[in-house]
Image 1 (cartoon, rainbow, N blue to C red):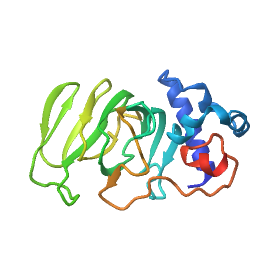
Image 2: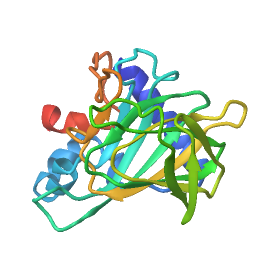
Image 3: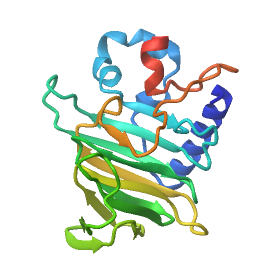
Length: 225
């Protein structure tokens, strides 16, 4: 991805978040100089990968297969006491996050506003394939639900689903309904080792630096600071 494209995605995200009255912490807007001036205080932010996170999953087409995320809080396995994480995400119409599951993370995916979020669900098999036979059992806002393998769950604003470990999920914004503001509340999140994608993908983008970063991504911290 070009840095100029990433910068524009961040600008668009700021506008959408403002429209939905969702506020990020003050450090989200720091320039590189402010990061360097505060290095002694921000180890949790850097080591636990809090902040801006933009990926095209190696597709080369962010708006078809990509995701905007901002990790607001997160612990780290066997390092600190915090056992939970929280993210805010923006999902466009037909913008796909590809099929994957998590080894360790249990998560609630929440439609915080905007359009509808469509989630395709499968159980995983012992050899990491899509289980084509067993129904998928989940809870939406505490209510038990069951879908057939590959069934579609549509979350309207205010609705959520709890996804346990090993449940394959793929999601996108429902066409014609607009962008979706999506929350995630989970156990500790580790995007470096806890995602198993059904297809080979790239989780963090390779960036061509055609302009200066507007804000640092989580994947920038150890390269730039």
